[in-house]
Figure: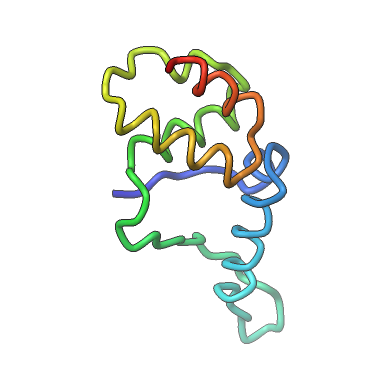
Length: 102
């Protein structure tokens, strides 16, 4: 499964996510024979270490800046994952909102 997003929007919310994307894009940019850069889709593989739905909510928050992305979460495992991810990516507003659910 994959989540698509725009680097500019996601990077604007989190310096850590910006670095993650920049590091991955640097290794995945191709050079065309004409010498111009060809931007490819950047793929970040978390090797199953991140819950898909939780990371999707993190990306949704980056786009919407809306804490309602937490609505409807009934699984404490998912909320804990969001707390972990929002802490790691320095999304402090989301982190505080997620922590308040406990």
